[in-house]
Length: 393
Ligand SMILES: *Cc1c(COP(=O)(O)O)cnc(C)c1O
Image (cartoon, rainbow, N blue to C red; front, side):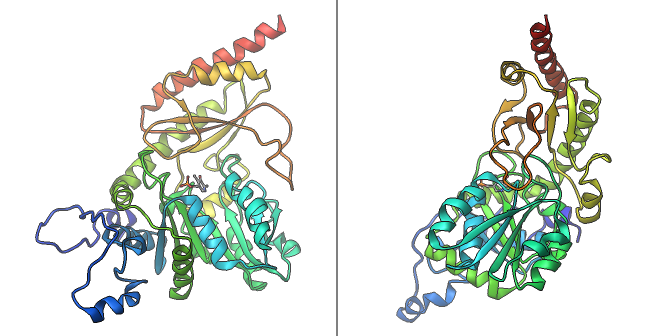
């Protein structure tokens, strides 16, 4: 079955109310018919139902569907993308271990590595996202985990996943991939040999900016059990209503991504020729440094890209962004509504500093008509350019 079909035709609970949609059970407590069943409830921990925190029909159903899309065996659903990242870290890393992260990694993941993992004796270091097989040189005997985030959240740098996997596995390290930008439709990280495929379901899968959830998908039952145990120790569960909403989001994921990607491509190609624009960062464009890797390893794109503007004053950037009529200023992406986020990378990178220049802004293209979005940006860029002309006079 193709992904688009899989998204809609999944097994749901066989209840005596034959709807197309799954039931949401909101429950902390599960009751048991016998003393023996109650005392043996731990046996239900990994696959069945023992307590609301450890799984309920909506979380199991969502997990099965994400596992199928990722091409994995098992999926753990967590309360946020960040919780998924933390569960992977804590399931793999112990005192004395080393973890490698790409320089442009999702900023809260970097903060967690520097300020939280260091406190439990784990050392983190960063690598150039263009490193590919050269990661050999920075792997240490104590490296237990290598993170890949591709493309990077703001700079859209695409990483050579198969080359990194090969080197990491050669050193006995596991590889975790944050594939949120492309969703499981656009990047099947496990097929490229990754051990953990991580998604912030809050973004494209939820798709409506109204929920927080994450997932981790693995190819082996053993890794799944390690993740599940870790999430239990941390007291993490996924809310039934959020799981239901994410499940509903899956049904339109392919259609939304197709439309958002087509609109983003149209807008990015138009912007690339705009006089106020220095460069577009979007692997779908043939001139992008990540284009060849994206074509080789990805099955699709998304409507998220960044734009490097020609340098002007900060005030001009504010008047560009604050007076947009359709784009709202916000940090997330993948929802129905278009968003724009100004980016400061000055202190965010340690391996390969971002060159000084004009401001970087990230767009998440929603489902509005692309022509209306272009008009909005056009007017905004005129305000931006107006500030420059005023300064020159
Ligand atoms: C948003 C995001 C996360 C975190 O997801 P939350 O659900 O907001 O915690 C992790 N990685 C990437 C690439 C993201 O964009």
